[in-house]
Structures are given as structure tokens and as C-alpha cells.
Image (cartoon, rainbow, N blue to C red; front, side):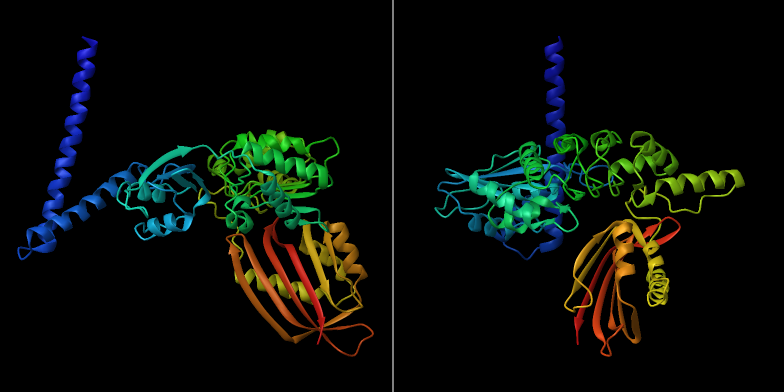
Length: 476
């Protein structure tokens, strides 16, 4: 009896599928009549019908990946396998597909095995679905129909050969700032050298993470800052970071922005490091704290007691201000952590705010109180000086202590405000870049020198601070 029920249910599902297909084909016929009218040949109508059926099939396949809100549900990886009668070259495949697919896509890790070639797509279900809709519709160089298969997959965990490992080592070296002990691994597998050589090296891959951690441990054990933003990390992918904790780690700043971190348990994966700053902005986990930022702050403080700054917010200052506000029955005025669902900051840095910041900065810089400007920088700010004049040496300074010493050590200056020009551009909702150029007189010199200052301004505590400052000096 159970078997018969299953057979009836299967038949009902098939009937519904055929009914849906018949309805769709009727829509195609109606659409044809509307578009073509009566003055067309049967051959033209058949050709147009094939085109509309192809569009319908592509739409149906793309809809499989759509959620209730119409957005792509699947945000992982796809493998595209293309099989022809003869080995297929990368340029031929991409040009053939690109001419028929309107959705933009970026192929990664092209591979070729016998008569099968392919590549990977990341976080692009629409493009993957549009490509597989071309199955048996494209011709290879020998005239055979190309078979296209699509598979969802976990982060590709590929084995790199000796030459590829050397490229990996070179990229790490190129991205390391020795002066600041900063390693920037943001959007790592989109590094141009990897793309040029079809090397797929996502940090979310277990094997790639092991290689990277080993190279860091062997070459830069004194690493102080690590940027891992935009690598599509989930919490499970961060376990490999524990290999950096060799007992004397100096890692003080970790950036995990713009990943796929959905669980607050991420704190357990990084709490063993002596972090003073952690950035988790623009991750799905913050959605659950949208209406309760205080809960988020307290959770972070409980899990990582030694952490000073979370998502650009000074934890101690925030908690203290909250206690005062509660005692007075007021809302806290200190900057809120960025826990908006859209990822946008509640403390947008406007052009007017940046201009006010710059006015206050340059009102103080030529006075004996110049050392007080250290308060204009975030605690982990980087000040890079590039100088071609003898009075000031090139250097990279990190943190309040080093920046304060530099401000005191610089010669007395007199900036010529009538030579200033400003260019203020937002980089994100809570980061605005200000570029100031002009001329400045140095003590003991009658000739002005040209300067350019590029500052990233971010919300901090109750106001705004500079998180990165590039100061360039050259003779006129």
C-alpha cells in the first residue's frame, strides 16, 4: 500500500510539472502572437519560439536559486565543467560563454583534464545558472556540442605545486608592510598574480590557510596587524588561525570585515591572541544585535576581556558612557557599534564633518601644542611619512606612542593656508578620505616645500579620528 501511495504522489508531482510546462508554453505562444502578429512565416515563428523557450528555461533555472525576497539564496562556490570532443582552451570557452551570458561573472582557477575543462565561480548563482542553461547549445572547435555541468561545492581545497607555492610566498611578501608589521590579505584569492596564472588560493581553504600560517610563522612571527577582510570566511574557516598562536604572538589588530561570519562563536577562535582591536563589521552575525548593541558589546567584553576596540568603538568609553546615561535617564552619546542589518554605519562621516576635523587639525599643527594632535588619531592609527627633504626622515609610525614622538620631533612648521586644496571622497559609509595639498615652511628655511596629506577619517568615541595618514613632503 505504501509503495502505491508513493507512486501516486510521484505521478501527481509529474502531472503538476507538465501542467506548469504546458501553461508556460501557452504563454510563449501568446507572447509570439503579440510580438510577431499575423504577417510572419512559420519558419520565423519556429525560430522565435525556440528563442523564447530558451529564455524561459534560463529564467526557470535562475529562479531555483531565488529566495522569497528575490535575492540569491546560495552564496557559496560553483564548479562549471565543460566537456567537448577535443581539449578546450580557456580563451575559447570564455569567449563562447561570454557572448551568450549577459550576467557578469569572474572565472577563477581555470583547469583542463583531457576533454573536460572548467572553472569556479564564487557567490554568483545567477551567472552559474545562466551558463549551465547553455548546455549543448554551444559548439566546440570540432563542431561537437559542448556539455556543461554545474555543481555546488565547498570552498575549493586544491593542492598547490612547488611553483605555485613560490607565487604564494611572493604575494605574501609583497603584501607585508615591514615598518608597521602589517599583513594585508584582503580579497586574497583575487590577487592579480593568482588570476593571471590561474592559481586558486582562497584563504577559506584548509590547505591554503595551513601554507599561509606556516609562512607567517616562519618569516614574520612578530606580526602585529592582520587584515582578512573580504575572504568569504565562515566561523569554521578561522580555526586555522590558531596556528599563529605560538606562545609569544604580538597580533594586536585583526580585521574580519565583509565575510560570511554568522555566529558570535567567532570570538572563541581569536581570543587567544593579545588583540587590542577587532573588526567584525559587515558580517551577518550583527543582524541579531541590531536592536541591542549593548548586548553585543558586553558579549565581546566577556569573551575577550583584554580587547579595547570592537568595530571602531572604544569598549571602555562606551560602557562608561552607557552607565552614566542610565543613571541620568539619557541615551548614550558615545558612538554605537555598527550592527545595522544593511551594514551601513549609524555614524556616517559627512563632508562637512571632515572639513571641521581638518580645520581643527590645521589650527593646532603650527602651535606649540602640536603634540595634542595625537588625540586626532585612533589608538592603532598608522602614520606614514614619505619625505625627500633632509629635515624630516621617511618612516612608518603605528599607535599613539610612536605618533606622539613623531609630532614632538618634527621641526616647527608654518602651513600656508592660501595654497591649500582639498579633495574629500567617501570610501564607505563610515570611512571618508581627505586629501590636502599645499605648501609649508619649515623652521630654519626661507623656502617652502610642497606637501600632500591623505587621511582616512572614521567615527571614534564621540567624534571622529584619523585611522590612516600618509604624509608626503618634497621640494618645490
